[in-house]
Amino acid sequence: MSPDSQQDFALAFLSILFEGAPFILLGTLISGFIDVYLPPGTMDRFLPRNRKWAVVVAGLLGAVFPVCECAVVPVIRRLVSKGLPVSCALTYMLAAPIVNPITALSTWKAFQGQGAGMMTCSRLLLGFLVAVAVGLIVMRLPLSAVLKKPLVDSLAEKDAKNAKESGCCGGHSHDHTHHASSAANDGDRLVAAFRSAMKDFVDVGVYFAIGVTITALFNTGIAPGANWLDGLAANETAAPAALMTLAFILSLCSTSDAFIAATLDKFSWGAKLAFLTFGPMMDVKLLFLYQTVLRKRFIVFLAIGLFVAIGAITIFWQHQLFQAR
Amino acid sequence: MNPKLCRILFSLAVLSWGVALLYFHASGRIVKYLAPDFRLIALIGGLGLSVLALFNLLTAGQQAGCGHDHGDSDDAHCHDHESSDIHPLLACVLMVLPLALSVAWTKDEYSAAALSRKGLYDAPLNTSASFLSAAMPAITREEIEKGHRKTADGFYEFNLLELYFATGDREMQTAMDGLKIETEGRLIEERTRNANGSRKRLYRLLMSCCAADSRAIPIVLEYGSNPLPSIDENQWVKVAGTMNFPMEEGLLQPILTVDRTVEAEPPFEESFLRNQ
Image 1: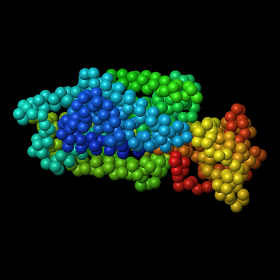
Image 2: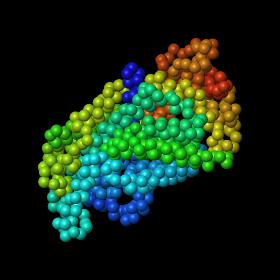
Image 3: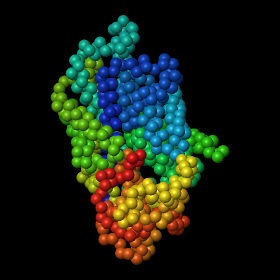
Image 4: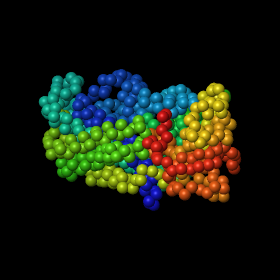
């Protein structure tokens, strides 16, 4: 790498790292405390008993618990291990970075003069619908097809243990906080919570660092293959695909990506919507973060599915909105 | 790996991120990396990471239970809450190495090659299509003059961003064409349409959130028969001259025919910031 490339990489790397690290910390602190303090099964109580409605409600939880895509992965990882159904966790994971007030506000501000209201509503609606659709599909899949093996094993172990404890407690269903309080004092649990948070931060931080490294290489043009994107803007089909690819490579935060999308003047409105919906759900950085929870094969299918579905919907949407004008 | 050693390694890796954030914030260099909205978040993040790391470092040897029963094995607890998919040593290297290299390599600014990629030599965007501008009353020369301060030698002080975006707005071009203006930015060589060697380029960066998403905002400086200024590349300057928007090779270009160029102190915020 030449000295100029080193300088460019360093600036891009540090700026993305500085922007993202606090949000990862927030997510891992929440996840650490969930790990130690949240009794198993608690999240279930916030969701409707009907599994389909639970997935729909999970798609809206981001409005109450606004989390960006960097922070949401460690949180859902813990929530899954705490008994949140995987379909609901994945729906929340995909929807929360988009369906939240911070992202809505930033999108609305960034698209002033470019149909801000329509873009904001379209982004939130499309993000919600796609996330719920993924959740409903995941609901029909076996856990082993979705989650990493250690996580599946850990869940199976917990299920077996809960069944055993149900027996020992007379067979009734309840949480086991009384076991917790008898087993450790508050100081111990605080130490355990911070340890868990640090472990989560390192797990996510490693993948984030790799993702940021790759992003910085593309962002500054050090990595080959970035310029071809510019030539695709005029093509109705290729433009959304090009911007989704760009979103995948740039790995921007959902709270800030609208400001980038708004400046991509060569591209159509629908292509920008594809950029804003696909990016928070799948990008280089998330590809690595998802590997802390999901099976690689599932991630590949998820990426392809999101790419095709979001691309098709945004092309259709663009056609419906602007054909008559 | 021994759990205590593992905790110490993880703590040091996390601490390195926290210290980097705090160092760049305390030294003031953070302004080159993040927009203001994110700077306070970065400071809080740096403090949080440092507290998390130091807390874990100081309690690395302490036995702690989360309260959950993880089974009879001594190893069960560690496995459930602290085991990682990646070898701890490798995890630390992956976290610390790119950070350390970046801190060593950074000069807090982009090279000319990266600036070129960020739009330094691109044609200005056409922004006249916005429905907002269509709904506004026509802009007149008088209104523009009234809205800008005038220097002692008769130049109107303009923000470089206004000059750049005027190229995409027919009304603004008409109102500003031939106006004597003064603006500031960084001076750099002109690589395109400069056969006579009489041109330079003036630019600033527009940052949305962080340096990675910043974009160059340039105009062309035409010196005509006057000698080019002997000022270092990327030096901050104030230039004054006459503004025009001629069509060159099918593209409208914002060109300032320069009367004077003087070196200037960098502004506190070197990049333009969106929404400010």
